[in-house]
Image (cartoon, rainbow, N blue to C red; front, side):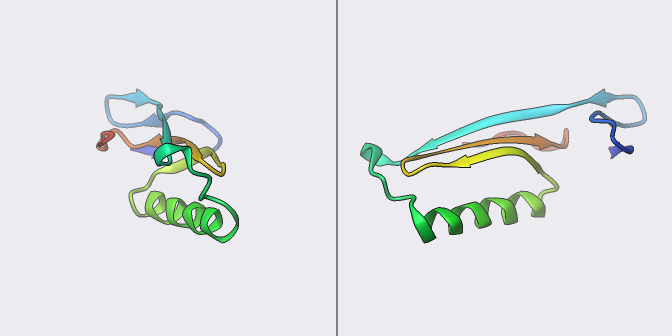
Length: 81
């Protein structure tokens, strides 16, 4: 798959697609532990993991007790538990 210029769709030999997934993680018992350095480290780890699998982060938000991430993925990847 290749993305050309500012076109948001990935094009293959016989396909045109745009796959986006919205993931939400919540801390156990809604404890507010994702603050300061912990939240920054989590954000960096998510960016690193996404770049390894050619996933682009469209939007993301790390709060004290939950995380939202909207990602654009290649068609060969599936969301896992």
